[in-house]
Image (cartoon, rainbow, N blue to C red; front, side, top):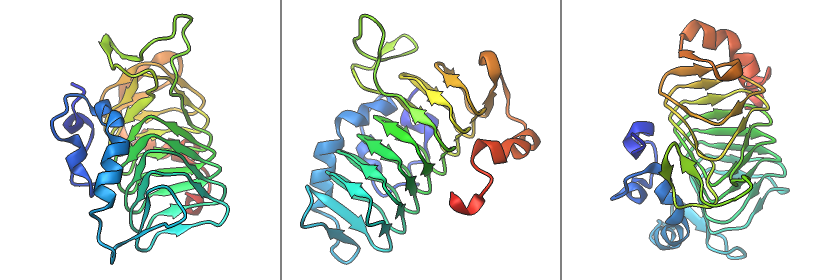
Length: 238
């Protein structure tokens, strides 16, 4: 139910091998640091540049990084990606090809498939973001279980074994502006979350999550009607 194949097309990343021999999609979060350092050394020097002034950071050909962006590393950033003004890429991050990490967005210990968009004032902590998934402005993927007793994050009744874990967003999932996704939530392929919501549950594939936790099957016409609120009014900014 929570296997990588349930959320992702593994042909939409240059690093599908990280998903080998795992049962649950979130298990790759434990593997990121070692995987990045190992795979990075194998990357073609014609396709990737290793930043000499950084801690194991590889940047793909055609990628543009703003002067005000900060990359901490270890990290692999793919081809033709944009890391925009004041973005902060922290430790243990793999970012795919054609991705946007935008203004004042922060990414930490996460895996991002090709063509995902994290464009405006977003926080992505300890998450896996699918192909063409999209976060509206101000979306937060919260990664710490702040219950009184603390402890590991659960997905349903499954103990992830992780104290810090936010969410899994399937391919082409969309989250509306200023929504917060709480630890342990999962969002299926092509599912949609309305703006200004708190998401604490697991949303199946092709569903729309509305106010008061109401969920309905996705209707494409309704999604198109909502799209300016799901992202921003300025398509080019994404």
